[in-house]
Length: 209
Ligand code: PRP
Ligand code: URA
Image 1 (cartoon, rainbow, N blue to C red):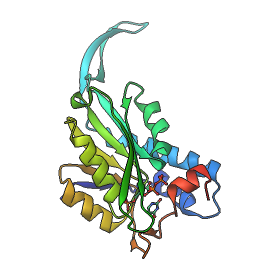
Image 2 (cartoon, rainbow, N blue to C red; image 1 turned 120 degrees about the horizontal axis):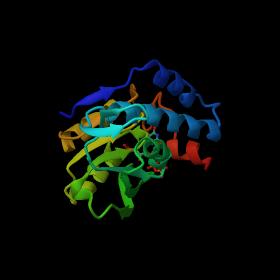
Image 3 (tube, rainbow, N blue to C red; image 1 turned 135 degrees about the vertical axis):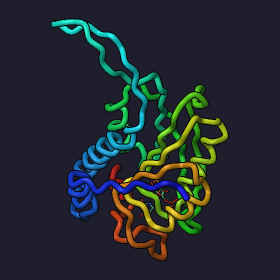
């Protein structure tokens, strides 16, 4: 089973309640996705290694800590994962970015791949896959299988809302991938939407419905 971390931080939970509300418009929805992603990034990068460096402050010489050159890559799953990207890049500007385009077929609910561009040196990087929604788990599992073909050093999956069904599918397919989410919801409905969820994340970010 994958290790799963559910963020119960009050700031995240407060923002999530506004995100779920159907009266929240696209502008605020985008801002909230970004703010939650930033807070999640803070926790999900907790295990990055540090090294001591010598620096000179205006007062004296001292040693301080810097990230120990670990290279990161962020891979949003199009479209909705892009809503989390800027916040992650604001925290780690040196990260490289890949994109994987997947959409769920409306009838089968299975993911269909339409785009794939990853950093050429991804085998030297720790990858964070971004998508606000983990529903059936098909999109996340397929995206991670695609990324694994390029042998990254490690993969973490960051989502905002996860269904129990999706956690199960992703954990079975990729037990080595740690899952981070802000909430584990109740179940999927007959159309494979998360209940209570927040509706269609891509449509709410981009105002397409
Ligand atoms: C949504 C979401 C995930 C996927 C999750 O994308 O952003 O990628 O569904 O569902 P799953 O776990 O059942 O695969 P969608 O397919 O609606 O595409 P979009 O982001 O382009 O709207
Ligand atoms: N994709 C979404 O955007 N929302 C869901 O509830 C399920 C899949």
